[in-house]
Image 1: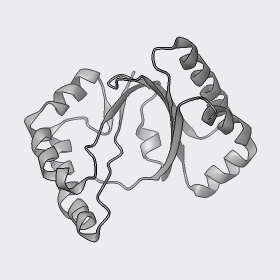
Image 2 (image 1 turned 90 degrees about the horizontal axis):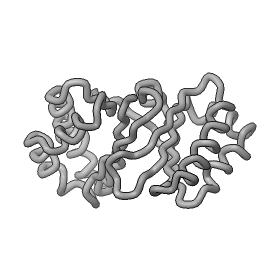
Image 3 (image 1 turned 90 degrees about the vertical axis):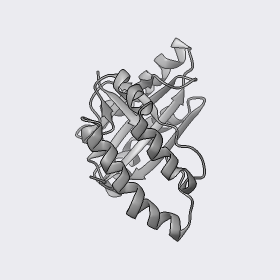
Length: 182
C-alpha cells in the first residue's frame, strides 16, 4: 500500500511572506524533493518518510521557512488504499479527516460512510486510509475534482452521503486548489 503525506502549512499572511514563499521556499522545496528520490507526496514505505524528516536537509529547510509560518508544519502520513497521484493531479481536492482513535467501531463506521460516498462518485478519483504517525489515529478520505462545477453537480445529487461522512464525530473537511511546484 502507498503512504500519502498531507501537510497544511500556515503561511504568514503578508505580501512579503508570499513573495518569499514563491521565490525562496518553493525553490528550496524543489531541491529537497530532488534530494529525496520518489518524493511526490507519496512514499513507498513509512520508514522513508521518517528518515527524510530526520535528515539534515529537512532540518535546514525547516530552519529557513520557520519565520514565514504562523505554526510549525505538521506532516501527516496515511497508509492509503491507492496512490495519491491522480488525486494530486486534480484541480481541486476535497479532504475529509475523521478522528477514529483506537476505536475499531469508529473506524468501521467512517469506512462504511466513506465507501458509500466513494462508490457513488463514478469516474472521480478517490482514496482513503488511516494515519500512521499521529498521536490520534485519523481516517482520511480524499476526492480529486476536475473543478468546482464538477464538485457542485456531483454533490448536489449525493448531499445525503456527504452529510453522512461529515456527521461523524470529530470530523473535519476542507477544499484546496492545487498548484504544481515541480
